[in-house]
Image (cartoon, rainbow, N blue to C red; front, side):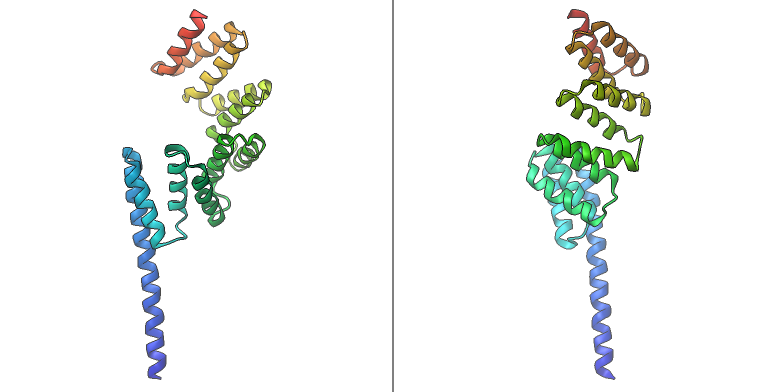
Length: 208
């Protein structure tokens, strides 16, 4: 009987230790997110790594490390490792799938990038990032009509995000359609009057 009581106590202790490790890992990850937002990437990376040391299945820490390696340090192999693990832990996480698409695009794997973006759009049809980057992907592989369609869908999904306006306008301009480019930029400025890139691009089109 006493042996059973001791065994039960050990099991409870292990459960509490596991719970505390997970709680501490989440807290560490939250601190990392704050450092990331401040632009302190080295501190953020260290905190995310400590979070994973406490709880290796912390999918948010895997995702955030993937973001650091993909967008800040440009370590694509480590980014892929952590993003894939985050996806394994939650296969329907739209943002993880989206970032894997971004990673595939960075590696020049256009078909694989589009496959991920299409998965995102199947789950979230108005995902502006997936629409915009689908346009970028199609443009890079020379499918300008498809790129045009995706950029316009991104604009419709969020008219106050100037990226798609600028991408569409400059695609027109680079292909000799100055009047179409100017029309897009004028609409962009009407909706986003303070966007510096749009004003810069309008200057290029005027001068060109």
